Length: 124
Image (cartoon, rainbow, N blue to C red; front, side, top):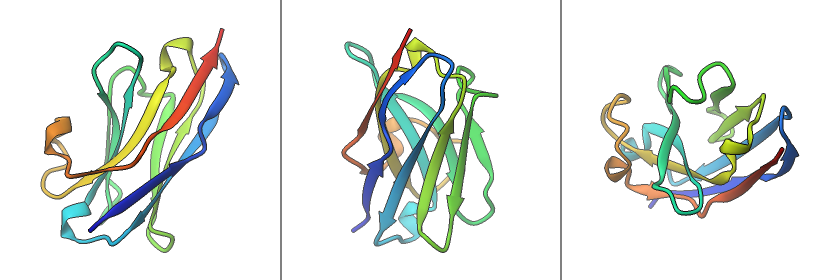
């Protein structure tokens, strides 16, 4: 059973930065792909970024390309999301998720395990 615990959310001004962390325990082949999703009030949960543990290959949503960076630390079993140049529209609850299979299948229903989420609020 994979467990994911997010941390690092908070309140930040527009233009600022935050770094989210996701600690993963119980990793198996079903957790080869790690991802971040987010959900704003009244909106669907949407994909943000994903990374493959084995080689560090990444994919990003267009809305965050060039501003957000996903990375992993194999020794710590942790995944990070560095968020720069934050905008008010980045305000959401951010979730860590994992699955096996293809890095390029980013549909949220393909992810098996989810964390509890961490709130990010960007003030304008």
